[in-house]
Length: 137
Image 1: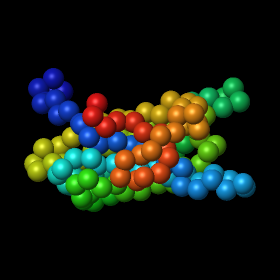
Image 2 (image 1 turned 180 degrees about the horizontal axis):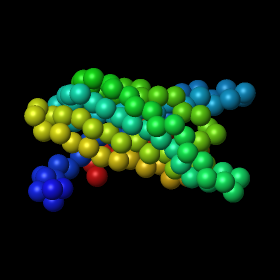
Image 3 (image 1 turned 30 degrees about the horizontal axis):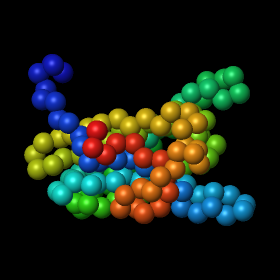
Image 4 (image 1 turned 90 degrees about the vertical axis):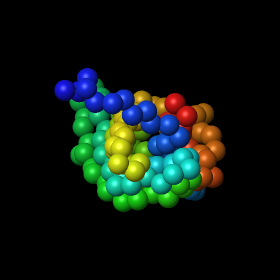
């Protein structure tokens, strides 16, 4: 039963949508996993999907699955590119990983229109501007 499982709190792990380049023609965005822990993560797996309404109709993107392997302590890794056209949707990332023999998982949700210039800040370990969810909470 789910109630019998231990509560494994995810801390110091973030998902960030990062502005890679800002040319006059187009902005280029990528999604990163940021591990601020002092320990490596093993068998890291991330699923991503988008959903919501665009032009008064329900829209769902394909669910993508990314096996990232092992992630070093205090490091970041690119998960995927993201198109600005889906910024108006809810973008969900579900992260699972192991530390030693303990499994952890957490869902990160970017709400519609939350990935905007006004919400950009410097993303740790990536050192570029982006919108960050997670960290110490």
